[in-house]
Image (cartoon, rainbow over all chains, first blue to last red):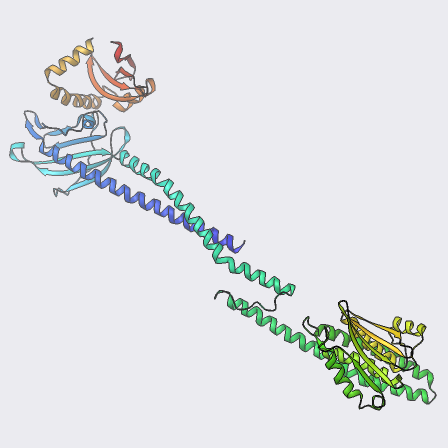
Length: 439
Length: 99
């Protein structure tokens, strides 16, 4: 069940319970009020009965009965009764029945209220009072009672509830509507939180943020803390994998050296076996490094091509190959590519080393934008590679080449592909042009 | 006509006394077992001619107790009904305007 549904249901139950309680309480209050009014009216009639008492030849009589016609109509709904020492007088409305007054020993002269069964089984509200008669009326105690059918009071109460019901219904509607509005306003931040979290998933947002109601801030904070922790963990794992791959590169190079020495000693077969295995391992390590680079690549990573190339050449010029060559750089000022500077440096470095090894006098590093892509070219004036071998190199990703050229091409191609680009080779006549096509 | 004459006589001899006797006669006759309770008479009257009973009298006619009821139907027609008080059988029912 949704949170909204749960709250709405609880609210509706509470509203119904409260209104039911209100209806019950109000009808009780109204019933009490009506009964008090009835008792007050009947006590006036009781006084009237008392005042109308006379002594006739055959005992106590009511010379001046109360005026209400219901006292005269048989079963009319209003009754009086007098019980004296010498018998009982009743209103005409009592007709063939009599009020069965309960034994009342109090005799304190106070007015007592009873509920009795009257004519036709109806419930009567009866006011009764014990009096001591004057000598003129014959003396002695007498009980005087006035009764009224309680059905009238109950009918008044029912009519009151019937009148009240539409207002209670309206109140219930208004309260329910107000409850819904309250829910809608109150729960809106939760919808916002859901939207923000799905934005996190789709990469449109980095963090949940802190612009939330106080109640949601702990949740948002915990989610953000979790994201931070997970990112740090991922970074650490990536760094460990990269370290492992880097660490294996040098031993593998040493292994290749050992294989070369074996070959020099005439053990060609063993050398081939070792080189094959080492190359296989090298491929795995290269792939792992490329994967680490891809994973580390965030969308906002970029490198200044010119700066990277300058730094690289500064190093290369100090090597024996680089020292004898004329390095030319043709890169537009401030040109950037969406690549990690370290990756760009590694790819360019591998290609530049190759070029330096094969060049006779000059190596050119150039960059230009072509449509949405960036072309980074390194051209040497060396012997170049024949067209059929170029195609084969590209097809085999350069790895089958036993010279250092192949390895350098492989590293650069891997980096370019990881970034969504590619590596192309072309004839520079004389020499070779290697181009990194980057998105 | 006999009924009219009786009422006239009762009125002439003094209504207060007649009224006072009215319910006492009914009470005594009921306690003596000579008549049925008024509630039963009213129930019978209600099935024969539903309406609001506006007057009830108990008369002694030819040695038996007779209830004379006046009632007004929901359509607003006045009826006079005579019911045997001992057996609750309807003796006479007539529209007031007919006589």
